[in-house]
Length: 259
Length: 159
Image (cartoon, rainbow over all chains, first blue to last red; front, side):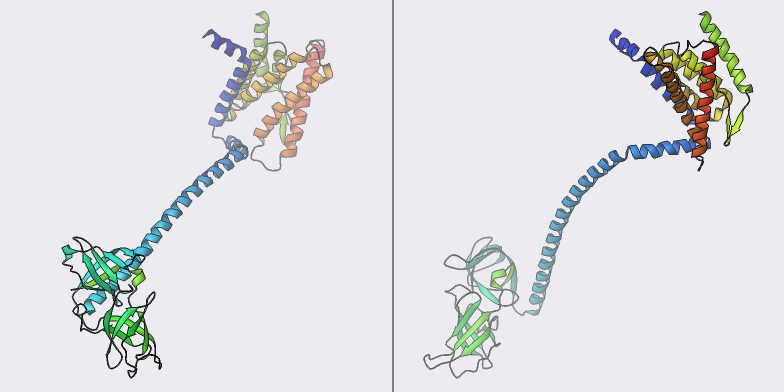
């Protein structure tokens, strides 16, 4: 306590000057005369200039913080935008599927693709429906464009589908104006060929290839592929007919199982 | 104690004298001797810094109350600072010669009147030169009065 009063005593001159100045200025600025108002505005101007570096620094800090918030917001918006685009695509796809189901005379069971395998010996996809959806082996699977495969194995809640692009896949088809019979077999990618097409048959590029209906598995007239070239030579007994699959095999999200 | 009473009595007389003192008009400014500032100078050179500040504040406050209540606080602020700065001279009374000491006091007066005329001409445009001339005349007038008192009353022993 004595130390405190000692300090005050040592600085009494400065304290007295500060106190008297503060009291005087308080008395002065309490008045509302025009002169005091002018002085007050001058003081405010001076304070504005004196405090301008502090203000600039604060602005800089706030801009930095604002920038960080905007960046966060931008990333968040981009993620949301990506999600919305995905939802839009999904919505378009589902709308297309809905139209397809309404227009088709077949009994179709929609299903979602949960996994794909193009590397093992059998090219397959896994669907999220199994015995719980009354799925059985050998049921054909198609997307809105055409045939994509058939069910080869069924679990309680999932099914394994052999894709039409698998090298062991074969399907009986018809093509051309005379609906000539042939056997589709895949070659590479989304391409395949038709075997057993006689040389006398008129087959043109663009002709639709559909299932024949003589199989126990596939109903008739399910679109399979479109002809891209057909030619014959003397070395072979049949025409070489090359086709491109209609089903979007490498980009499957939703498919239909034909009951 | 006797000196304190005599100074107080002199102060009362000076307050009344200040109100009856004639004014001269120079550049739109009414200029006269500031008896209280000169009195503060004389007192501040003979007492401690602490007392000089408090007496300066008291003189200024009384001057505010008697002459310009709408600017209450302005004279008390100026006189407090003047009391402090004039008293600062006592630290150098052995080292500075008389001329320097008078110049220092002139500087204190200029500071005092700069604040005074800044407040007085605040908000008026084009009065800067008038204010500058008024500050100079007012400061020199009071310095002359101080020199006169120092010469004829204190016999050059005050400054």
